[in-house]
Amino acid sequence: MVYTETVPPRDLDAILADGKIRAVTNVNQTSYFIYKGEPMGFHFELLKKFADHLDLELEIITSNDIDEALGYLQSGAADLVAIGLSVSADRKEMMQFTEPLIQSRQVLVQRKPNGWELYLI
Image (cartoon, rainbow, N blue to C red; front, side, top):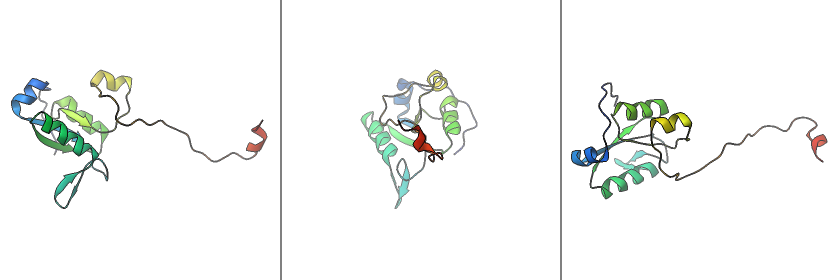
């Protein structure tokens, strides 16, 4: 589903009045997938519980491209993004983040250089 039209972003009151929340998530083996005709996945379950809590219908938009997903949000085609995103200064200007559900950190994995034993003290 590709949205080309820009619509105004909706606040919670507008979402509640519409009765539907539109969320972008990625398709993979853990976040969102269809199994035997039923949607499943970690992000789907979180979104479904959130929508049910607010008594809203949930509309899922899928995108495995982060820039495209953020484009849906910026254009107003989606109300929220449910993708594991790193928090950056640029993204903080564009959207609000929830409290982290999962945190990770980057590490560098490489081969030991020749003669690495010489650096042990």
